[in-house]
Length: 229
Image (cartoon, rainbow, N blue to C red; front, side, top):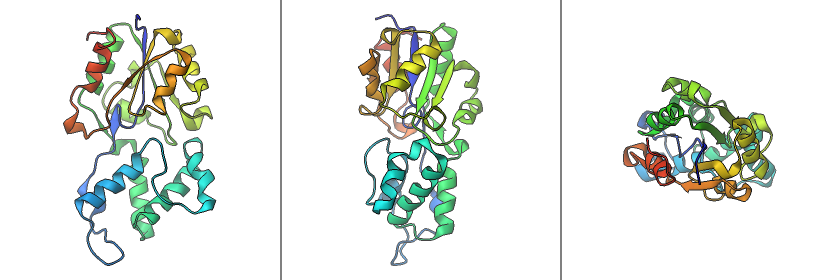
């Protein structure tokens, strides 16, 4: 396979919503106890898990959960309920946490995000992002100086379709002007991002580890598919 294009997922692949102690300052459970580190980490996992059900939700929220990345209003509604059901019972605290979830400035890039995207661009390899998301992530790319290096950014809430629907991967390849067989998809979800293989793309799985623990997974992923930067 000759790679002419690389597609990336966003959350857990290029960027990660990292735990910030200040966000949970003053947060207490129903018994008035401060949240411990394990509980904080679990809350962050629930906010960023790419697939699967993260909390027990009332029936009225089931459709909102399934379609959250297609509609910003549904996204807000269901994640506020996830926070409430996870123990964040104060509305003001839940609103503040949700605001950080959808703020691209609160997301941390992986150490090799900028050099990989820049290197691919300089090598003449087309690049794009496919994200199941309900807010605009492009300011995060601009913040680290690579916004102009992506040839396409497909966000589910604007495209009206979510991964692993084959239409989204085919649409991305069409916008990049490449065949699926010439395209590598990199993501942290075998279920969602791995759907690219259904249309003929190659797929590389990366782990959504804390950014300090994953310095070069993107570099290794492209290298393993014949792209040396």
